[in-house]
Image 1 (cartoon, rainbow, N blue to C red):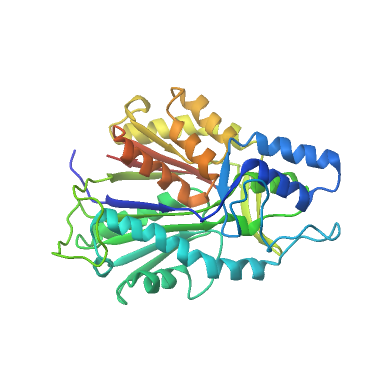
Image 2 (image 1 turned 90 degrees about the vertical axis):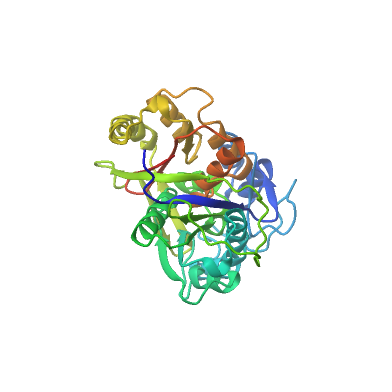
Length: 380
């Protein structure tokens, strides 16, 4: 099958310096949100069911093995206390996001063998903070990208947005075969911890974490070559991560309130209906079978399932509805266990593992977000 552009020639990931064990995260949650012993038991039981062992946060000031150390969140002073306001949280995003994004982007550039000056387009992806000039401008400065770099911001789309970013990058290199596109996802979910005992908020608190991931996308792997580089490559025998052959979307009918992500007075707030796994089971198989058939594939031909680990129940719904073998989502579960749900960055962590493991292709990226929206990308 002919390649039509959109080759991922480098991938890089980054997490915050300090990680919190899940037990410490649960203890922190009870201190912040729980007023009674029964509430504390409920929260601790929920954290135990997440499938997460540890997660990173830019707010952590120590390794947080037994206790979380940060000065941003304080226990509620009364039942109306909802913690820092949205401005304070967004200001912290503005100060913390560029450094984490730079680390992931630098790793992706190294893997691709390109120099910063080679990049022609930058696609940034984030749903956890906004400002203008934003993370895109901050990364141009931090990475010393050309001032002529053209920018696209994929904002507030949620956990599947890496696919939306890859789709944009694929379109850019298809339109201009000489384009060199850097796409970077940066998510600081821990800035939006919600106080109180609203079930949706407790669930999102228990699942989400901070992380960044980046890819370099070129047309059919054609790259500029230089005798020397300001960014030294650590890969003497560079290999393509994969070619983005096709992407697709499906908006699930009658599901507009099933998953939402809205700006509140005290951070961004998520709602997550208990019906989401059932909606996935009901609608995913027919759509995905049709998508794969259109592109000459089937469920059985997929060698790597990069399913966004939105939570243990969502992974189980995908596994059950598609009748996947038990090992198919092993990397999704291990990324969730080691890092938590890092929103848009998470699927790229899974792709990085596929590349390191020489996982047979084709690969399928599959994510879910507000809408309820299903997004897919097929890599060869």
